[in-house]
Length: 468
Image 1 (cartoon, rainbow, N blue to C red):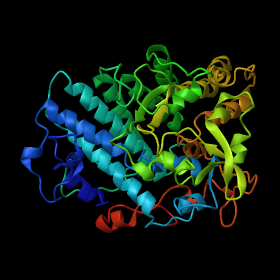
Image 2: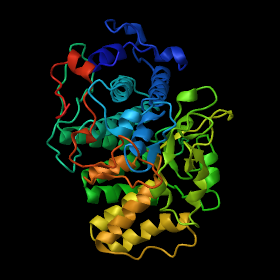
Image 3: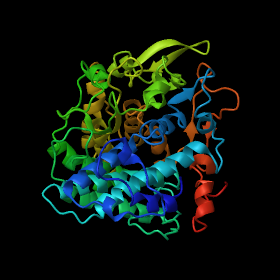
Image 4: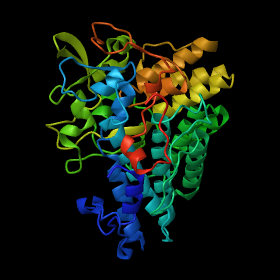
């Protein structure tokens, strides 16, 4: 059931009595059993567990969202020896019935319905504010993804059509698309409310905490081009969040750790997988690991951006694929043989520092821009004496550092979108062959996903993106 209409009818009938797999089953979508509503804190906590589990869907942070962000940009390419997965996205040949983008839409709205059930519950207890704050943050995160993948960037046209906003249960609802600006306003409202409600700053990184909401506020403001707000939110995380960067000596060990952390090292929020709850061969790691599908390979152009003394080079393995020497991504090393499985990072401290650097650059404070940029760059490359650039070159340096630091975490394509820049793939060593485009212009209609056709069949109030 991939339609919003069906999801939001079904959503109210989620079983909230258990956090086992049966919790995720949907009752028939035309029934609303009263005995399955959230009536106490235990039921709310179970619902929160189900909401988090939904984010692990292979259509969301379990695989697709991070992959889209690199495979559709210039960071990763699909080997000519492949399993036929994500070739449509890599080659920009998707249509309105494309399975991956339709599934991502459906899974995101499924997560939203789960968040809505928590947010709109009448439970009031010592811990209910924290739980509602977590749900508000996740709803904001899902709408951020939806509006950035299925609509024009805010920085290009805030008045263009965004995605439907569904905040409460209504069995008869057939929503139209809200404006991009309206979706962002809702995201901001959710994160502002969440920050007020959240009390925990010490839960491990698989849960939303107070400063996870604040870090996401900084990202959202960055994507609007609201640099004053981005700076304020990011600085709050830096000053009060208690997070630290991994050293050059322990960065590889940090990425090798498959478990959530409570020490505030790097990770602010991540979607967790473990020995029991994981996507198996559908996991993100399986798509990079040569012992799995191994289809996605680091683009040589990106690899060449790292200096020989940059510790991030150690997150790649040199190997052979499709008859050529390749750089294999090893940010997710825990696949088949590992008892525990890799988590998917949603937002890290390094990103917040780089948001802060860009915010200062955009507001003409180059001293502080360089300060925070070099905190990341010099930590990753101890031999580097630091950037000393200014003006447009300083912005380019910040964006390059973002590309290197956040590679294979799904942010590169979204950065190109908000910047309204072409995807410009550098074809070194035949990374891009055959029908694969090397340049995809910023104005190309396929730079945003189509609205799923089955959604439009169910709801005629939802319009299609131009070109599909």
